Image 1 (cartoon, one colour):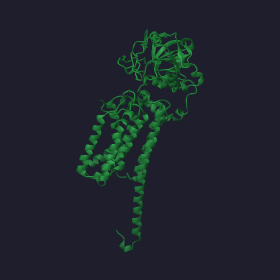
Image 2 (image 1 turned 135 degrees about the horizontal axis):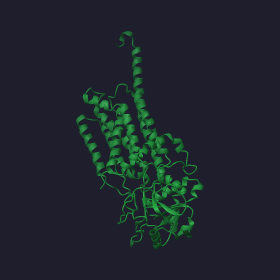
Image 3 (image 1 turned 135 degrees about the vertical axis):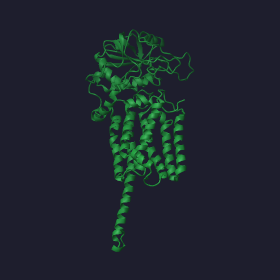
Amino acid sequence: MRETGAIPERESARGFEWNGSTPYAAAPRAPRAPAATAGMRLVAGALGLALAACGPAADLPEGRPEGGIRGTVLDPPLEKPDFVLTDTDGRPFDFRTGTAGFLTLLFFGYTNCPDVCPVHMGNLGTVIAKYPYETRSRIRVVFVTTDPERDTAERLKLWLGQFGGDIIGLRGDPAEVDRIQAELGLPPALRPDSVAPGTDYPVGHSARVLAFTPDDKGRVAYAFGTRQEDWIHDLPLLLRQRGF
Amino acid sequence: MQWWCAAQGLPWTWTWRAYPGVWLFVAAIALAWWRWSRRRGTTPAGTAYFLAGLLLLWVALDWPIGALGAGYLASVHMVQFLLIAFYAPPLLLLGLRASVGGEGTTAPVSRLRHRLIHPLLTLVLFVVATIATHLPVVTDNLMSNQAGSFAIDTAWVVAGLLFWWPVIMPGGPAGFVPIVRMGYLVASMVLMTAPNAMITFSDLPLYATFELAPPIPGVSVLQDQRLAGILMRFGSAVVIWTAISILFLRWNRQETRLMEEEMREQRKPDGARAG
């Protein structure tokens, strides 16, 4: 599915981006493998036990992927935003220069998120960790918190560390984060106006992962519902800038 | 209010939730048993067996196991399957058996039942139901709504009862002797190897339901899936091999008794031997 212009304000594949009071309209769920292949997978799983148990692939999955890219191709592609935020070690991180030439996966979320954020980061971390170093070193996953008040550098580092994959965590002024999201066509984070101390509260945020290919163009968006098999399928295409 | 456990996509909490559909389901079975046992009579042991099976069924379907298995953890979903299809049915049937009485009848209803519950048919139905309800496309599409989740659970109940019927209930087909019953149980384990291996050894999460569910801290989706596969193998093996052991011991006892009777007959003086 191709989108034109800025990313429309359709985010969560499940109809809601957050557990707050303002739902966003549903976006199409990331496509799954066709139902007809389920039976083939059953047979392949039974017959290919030895292969499946041999551990991660030695290199990028070769061969012809079934169909094209599974994410939402952005047409025209986005320009890589120019911003500087603070990483979890307290150092300034220039997003444009720090990710130049890499396949960059950018996501805006927060550590108290009950579902979308840990699922996205968990799936990405698991898939990327399967690749050899030569491949992993060409991918950058960047997580920008939309809840800097609670997501201290230490908390962010600890939370991201559980997912592996060396995810870069960034913090910044909420207004600056909102500006970056607006530049990318994403809705701003929705934070409650006032919160009693110690109260747990949700923060509305985009549920999409934006993929910037090594030519520094934002070419594909991945909604919540993107599975590990979808990342396994698309990451090689993104690295090779194929499929769109 | 939800009437049956299904995947909701909400973060898990330990706050109790009511699923009245489960209570109605269990109550309906209990009521049917009560009316049956009043008409046919039963033994205290039979009642105890049946109620134990019903309790396992209730535990498997209701909160928290029903809710966790429907939308959060593949391993708990597997625990549900084991309880519903492997552990509860033998107990329910043992309770029913106490009311049925002797081996076989010649009533037309019984002959029809014997055709429908032929071991070959029940084995195939059970394996097909197991594989079908564990296919990712089926699980993901059905578990996301209450009707689909109810359909899966009911399929397991029916398949489990059918599978265990020839093993436990009297009056099976001629030739379905204990040694053949043991082979029937072993065959079920062999035939379930494929779905079991698919779940245990897959390198990727198979089920979107559990992969995209709000995660439970400390459990990765793949670890959970592999645990589900291990539980499927060993959880089913426990009850299968227990049943095989019981069948073997009974068969051995019966054979020993027959041999002893034969030897006693042979020791009698010629004129005192029967027939």
